[in-house]
Structure formats: structure tokens, C-alpha cells
View 1 (cartoon, helix red, strand yellow):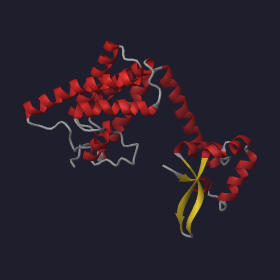
View 2 (tube, one colour; view 1 turned 30 degrees about the vertical axis):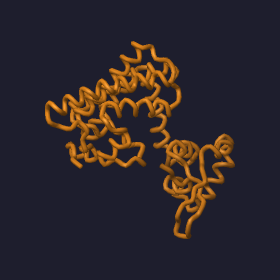
View 3 (tube, rainbow, N blue to C red; view 1 turned 90 degrees about the vertical axis):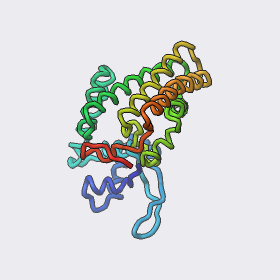
View 4 (cartoon, rainbow, N blue to C red; view 1 turned 135 degrees about the horizontal axis):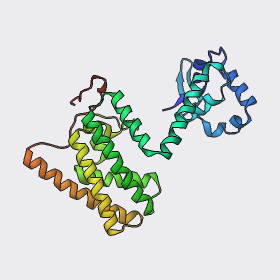
Amino acid sequence: WWFVAVDIIAILTESTNPSGYLKDMRRRDEGFAQGWGQIATPLSIETKGGIQNLNCVSTKGAFRLVQSIPSPKVESFKLWLAQVGYERIQEIENPELAQDRAKEYYELKGYPKEWIDKRIRGINIRQKLTDEWKKRGIQEQRDYAILTNEISQATFGVPIKEHKQIKGLDPKFKNQNLRDHMTDLELVFSMLGEQLTTEVTRKKDAQGFPKNAEAAKEGGAVAGRARVDTEQSLGIKVVSGENYLDTPKKKITKK
């Protein structure tokens, strides 16, 4: 997501001249001025006067922008940012707090308790797997994504992108986490694929990306065979078009 910087200032400060307000901010705050090139990106934005190049900020940049606004109108927002930062430090010191907050998040979103328990268990299994990858030379986020896709494709028979499409999710929205829209059965097989991959990775002492990719395919393949057996025995399809896009009603919706 991108936001026009002066729009944020106009909303939060009610300034009649947000562009001038921004210039004053950059003049007063030396650190903010020096980092402006990393905070803002000029983008072509359609306005009433036609397409214009305007300074835009990402969500992260918007938070940094807010920190430099001297208006008392944004003090409560700054306090909230401080609270979020404090909670993050607490979670690093005590990982169980992160699980508790995740449970609370899903409860507020309207997910069933049984689903939440599986989702949290899946997060734990995922964390153990990524810890193994880190130990074995996997550092780049791109490599994590590729390995995850290898497991998912072998487990479910479709790559993550296609799985999202089946559920009616928009690939452009990175905040639409596939696992947050999985059925209970999909979560179970997702956990199985990643747990088995962890076991294979440890057993073969996979080092580096190529060997870990082999382990990911092998672990996912074992889970995939279990999925096929389940589908044949029960006459069902594990990969489902159901999603949780309608969580406020506390029920799963079918596509």
C-alpha cells in the first residue's frame, strides 16, 4: 500500500497547506530531512488536475512520517506506535506472548476456536522449520518463499498462487495470507507437509539451498500422498474454494 504524504498530513493536522507543513517538518527535523529519500517515493497519481508526481510513502514510511509531525493531534497515534514497539520487544523476550496475541487477533476476526488452535499449532511448526533453514544457510526471503512453495505444491498438488486463486484471493494483496483462509483440513495437511520437511531436513542434514529444496519436495510429497489417500478414501477434495473473507459473520464462506 502507498499513501500520498501530504494527504496524511492534511488528515492528521487539519492543515490548510499540507505541502508547506511538510517543508517545515523537513526544515525543523534534520534526521527526517536526511532520510526523506528512503521514506518517500515519487509516484504518478491521478488527481483532479490530472496525473501528477507526488511523494508517496509505504505503511512503514507513513509511521515514520507520523513520528515527525509535531502536532498534539497525533500524540495518541505516537503513543500507540510506542505501545506496539514495546509489545514487539516483549514478544522477542517471551515468544508465548506472540501466540497469545495471535489468538486474540483471530478471535477478534471471528475465527472458530478449533480453527485458531490448529492455526497457532501450524505457526509453531512453521517456526521450527524456518529455524532449521536459518541454521542450514537459507537467509534470503526469496529462498524461503521458494521452499515454502515447493512444500505446498507437493502437499496440495497446486502452487501457492493457484491455491489463492481457487479461494478467490487476490494475489496483489500480500496481506491476504493463504493460511488464514484455509479450512481445518487444509491446515492439517499444511502442518503435515512442513513437519515432515523438518524431519527430512534434519535426517539428511540438508545444507544450502539445493539440498533444502530437495528436502522440501520430499517432505511435501509424503504429505501429498497422504492427501491423495484421504481424498480417495473419503471421496472429497482437500483443496477447497472456501475462505474466511467473511469472518465478521463467524462462518466460512464458499466460493
